[in-house]
Length: 127
Image (tube, rainbow, N blue to C red):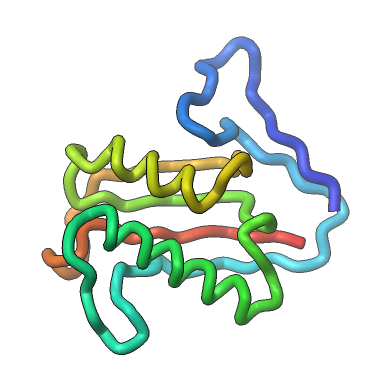
């Protein structure tokens, strides 16, 4: 698969570890991962935003692995935050998980399904 980050010179440049667009060519598989909530497999909700964010990303990782993929295959991320005050912590934990990978990214401030959940993370992956 050929993957290119696209950041048009005549549009705003990305800030914080993402690409404005990701172009794929010659891929064979696409995986659409539903919003992963910050619960453990036994329905425990970690305390605090950072712990919840790490758990949501662990759940993303579990879905990728179940499909025979890895975080290196992520091409699009959408993060739903319950409160904009978590923006910088979200960026920190996302960078911890993604490292130098720069997928297309959207962050939305939204009412989350369960008010105890501080975020949800959904991804699209391709190989």
